[in-house]
Length: 573
Image 1 (spheres, rainbow, N blue to C red):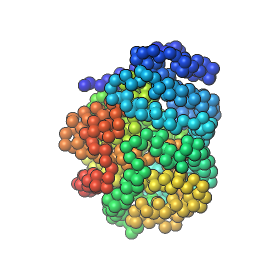
Image 2: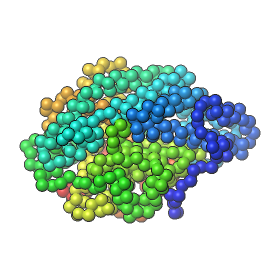
Image 3: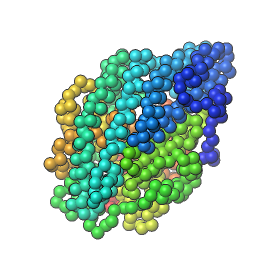
Image 4: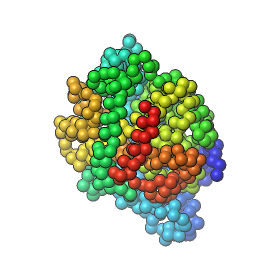
């Protein structure tokens, strides 16, 4: 089946074409209509669901644009006010209606007549929302939305000076690839010192978030926020115990390989001990990889790469460019990180990132490009809710694209040796990210199981877990004080709690997709597109099956897939 990136905005049948969300007074009548409308047949119910879906899409897209604009310019107070107005004045008033509409759907006598398995996951999700809804949590959740955004504001202000010029944290990290070890050390320490200056502010912010999240869980009759969040995130197919097993498997099967990678790096650099500022460096005489210079060049080269893989993938990026749905370069005042934000009504998502000309930016671009393709493929599904796919498959979309695209990275590098180094860098990243995923995930479990912990206990526990998953090859001596606050650079802890183990589960899925790809490129890409086109209309194991994968992150599975990467890596070095 041929897929088209010629995406168009959803037609409106319920709301006026020119309707925009300005205030509650103009929005409420449409929610009231849905709440009070009589449903006398299956056809009435289906039309009601389509109208509800249309309203959801309009509200969701409005909220997304407010957040996108604010993260693109954290210093603009007007954009910040627009976002705060939505989360404090609009969203809290929508929530009781959302609960009412959910109950109206599950209690309708015509709901059982809805045909097709696609309704199973949707109705399961609706019942979960009803179970979790508490009126007293509405104002707390509004506060949490505002508080979480403060992380971007604090981080967006962080800059350091190198050679008389000001750099954002993302831009400064380029210096860590320089062959001059003294320069690397100087910049590394400047970055750590600057982050350390904001440690108290970030600690205080995180303490507020933990306290309010714990209260949300208690209000919903859960013993802790972790247990609440597992239900809210729809983790129907695995448990906290599975996460613990994942942590142990990483220690057993991945850490030894991480040690080998860093030992190899130490030998290549010709240093007695490998320090943290050496990890991204190249030996003297070898220039750092510079795959592009500007955001526009990054986009053009990624589109050329995607065209070789499957032209449809490049067409998605072309459409986003045409619509102005890209903000790729790092600059002062821009929030850190990168994301692909689905836009429910427009269909074409928005990619936000902080490119600074590094190899890691290529990985981020193709990663977010994979998410974007997922958004395009699921857009034709009838209801907004059908497009809400689990994060564990969303990250397969992005991480598989990182690995698929490697075969066509000659669009970024015309030199064979540089291309080989780029692939080596990517495979090292695939392996070395696992211990960090386990560290962040295990830390979160402890945080929310012990919500009344002190700042001292928090730092001590972080260090204990960090050391558990750190390579003994890297010498961190003298940096202990900086390391105690290393968790503060992880956006997910502040903005999307418990969203991190997904990267580990999905990395395994992506490695499974890559294994297929190396055996038969076209079958693998067809499986990939087929699975992503299903959106959230199947359970997680069914979505994996549609992609030709097994939903399994046991120790044995981890060992098997890590062996595949190791074999490929050994051929490169």
